[in-house]
Image (cartoon, rainbow, N blue to C red; front, side, top):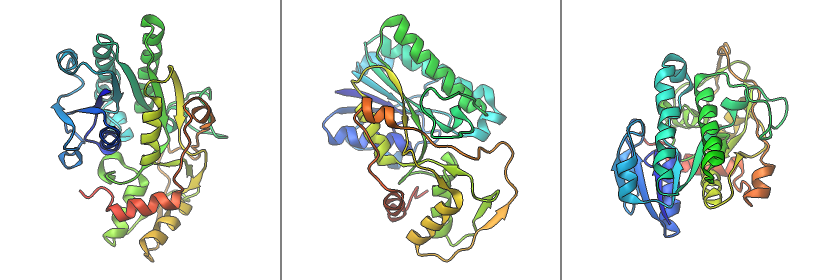
Length: 302
């Protein structure tokens, strides 16, 4: 297949590109390098340096893709609060540019959304029909983009798929950009720097390894339209995560605790049974194995 990956020089996107190349697809990277890194680029992929806030029609006319994996995003919650217009320009209007360019060529879009930022506080593993209560402009923008995909499917008979990711971690994740707690822990442990946990550390998240996320993306290409959670269905507290990361790193660092940050979700975990059934996908990496692979990779290597 000929596949465009927006954000293909970023953390998740570069792993998707590697997997597409490995299975023999023709991969095209669209990235403006706002957060993506040239070091992540696969030499077998074609690069198109472009901002998704600008029209993609000419680029898509040149490539004529069969599918589009849309990962380019403004993904920082804090930035979305401080600059909601910027967040909407990238995550809503940028997605519309992708949808319209793809429609001209009958290309399927697989869209990366977010579970935690859309569902808000969870009292159980959240299925796809769980109440959607975003607590940030980022979550609201992603939800709006999801609705555009669903509308295009109804209006034009397209077959676009939305994947709601849990907390993705793994090699190439930059702590200063994506803000992933695992990247922060591994980078600070490697540098023998102090670590701060906000709140009591008993807040939980669903941590899913990037390799499993890539397999979900590949499984979604060519499948029927739908919205699917991509996580593990398992909760891990920040305290337990720190202990597991410290074991992998062989460190004896003791964390410091600080007051909880305003608006932080206490419990976030996804029900992934629909993806298991409809996409024949399930996570393969245990947290310990994923942490080990992340640590041995050097994480983001900024």
